Length: 148
Image (cartoon, rainbow, N blue to C red; front, side, top):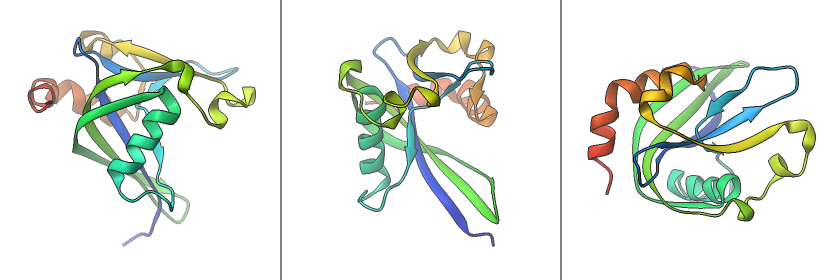
């Protein structure tokens, strides 16, 4: 069994109109791509949920409720693996002016724009990882029915 070198948590975040709340990443010399908000667990995070709440606040100035882990994705990383936990949840508040972190202070990291994407538009979007897009498209009704 390979060692887990990185563990992260990301939100399959739904707004009040059942659109996905994603981050559109732009980097010089690369085509734009989208990612679910979230990031790596830190030693101070008491749980996956705590890490996700912290990441949503940092990246979006957002809060969410009804957290439910629904998807797990792993990929090779050096001599081990990287594991991403995906949690479906409902956006309850967002204030982009409250975003913090190195993503917004270091221009070399590129752009991090909040983007709301209707599920019927998702096939056109380069969502990373691709397996996440496939999972959402195959399970949209079930994901939405589980939200509180």
